[in-house]
Amino acid sequence: MNSKLPAFFLLLFVLFNSNNFGQIPSNGFEDWTSFGAYMQPTGWVSTNEYATGPFYAITRDTSHFPPSVGSYSIRLENNLSLSFPSAGGASKTGDTLLGQQGFFPITGHPTSLTGYYKFNPMAGDTMTIRVILSQTGLGEVATAIFHATTAAPNWTSFSLPIPVYANADSAEVMLAAFNIDTNTTSPYPQGSSVLYVDNLNFDNLITGVEETIKNAEILVYPNPATDHITIDIPENDHQMKIMVYNHLGEVLIDHQTLSGEFSIHLDISSLAEGIYSVCCMHPNHNITTKRIIVIR
Image (cartoon, rainbow, N blue to C red):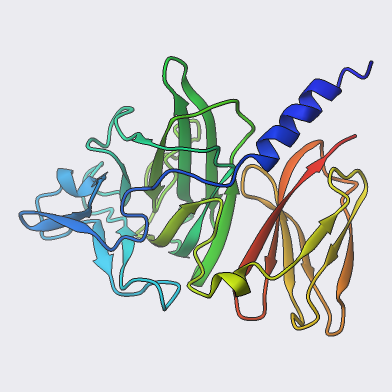
């Protein structure tokens, strides 16, 4: 009997049982709570608590995306003239910035964290978007981190795949305009970088368009796949951008369709065995995400 079959069926279970999920507190950053001279997103904590003013790293900003959804985003800015931690633009769910106190309950089986960001890096800073899933009695069961060093002056969507896990009942999300990974040589702010984030969600990118448009039929097959996949797109979607992400949020394949190209054949022979996100950006900037299993 093929020893890979149990793992294969586990992948199938995870892939096709991930359709509904817990609510991220203030996921659109519309709700804020005042603490004297500063504000924080409701249900979140930030480095504002360590600052004495007049500079506060975390602020509510009127730049937001999508334009039809909400009125605000979260803005995170580093300030190297201050001492750490008030010098760093960082915020996470929960009521304390240090330690594992930021978990909120979730339901279902989320397989990715989605949302939008803008980033202006300075002096080599690396932005961070991190999600941790936890299970009562087991502790952390899955962690996914999205790091970026390149500038994103316009609102950019992301889909951060979460590694395969069995069960989870809570999650924590953290955002920073610098690298919060203490395993690196530079876990602190390097420059006065600025990060904006808006409309976080599990598995479904918030688009602000009608559901019937969001769910325009896109077929990705075969699934599971080995060396190639075919993507069939609707005939009214010209020049669609197709990206394949791994569980770290890295873009492994970036394909721009041509006008009149409605059936795309992608070579995935370089991908290792596992689960990947296939993100299809429509001409109206709506994004449809499909998940595929690659087997060897």
